Image (cartoon, rainbow, N blue to C red; front, side):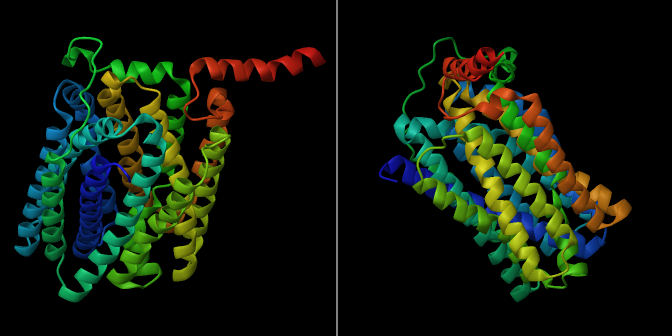
Length: 417
């Protein structure tokens, strides 16, 4: 936070994150209020995810070859435009399919937003402060994700309309877009000519070679894919916990409140000593919390379960982000972050679709509990399938350091035999 560049980046990030969290809360409530169909909640996630999955690789290549600052600013202004269109659509009570079209447009914007934001951050501050900056950024996101749903819930309850929330989102994203223009990143030092679209798979190739990154991304994707119970929160708020839109805002905020507390602790603590073990354990705790939430009929127990799950998930978020950025050359960061975005979208949004689909067949409780069980199974399988991830210590450890640690573990076994 001593870096002026990072303070401006954080302010823009906070405004954008808070606005988009408000939008997600409002659109989930409004669509379920109008249709009453759990499957529609799943389709909301799918509408957001598919454009990202299809466009992120070329988007990452464009980000690596262009001005990341200008691209980030443009995505925020585009988000503001989508939110404004949603406000007009909600005020006019247009057919539901219009919402899905606008969410697809939002997904197209997201495909450029994540690579530009992730690739830009390391160039805004010295390398030795990057790990601490990631922890702070995670904290800002968690704060926005707590405040956003709460503000959205109260705004809907007070006004009786969701369009107010969409209008506020448009204003916040506009502020973020303007702030991003004034960032002053270091120039990107390219060791090769600017990338072409034919080079868009180089980020995926880099991740395939770095098994710790591949293992962390696979773990997060599959764990959240099965544990996407937050997509069912409008159903729990309306039919199981009977807490209304304000309660929905609290339920959506609970995971991020837990994650915010964890982010503050991570920002103050020393670096991870056994990062691989911490990552696997955090995913297991996340799975247990989803099972408890799925079975709960108490509002406050549900809040606690979601909070614990959010705290555990934040450990995974911080470790994954640091791994992707510190073990990737600067000229590949846009494309590597783009692949990371595909993993995130597959987990969060496709996971929301999976949860909505299972809930439409078997009910929300079975959907949530089975997802938590699936998350525990994923943690166990990844621990076995990716030994390099399990043995990982320092997050900035080089590949040579990882090999040396593996040899150190093998020596006592050889001596014993």
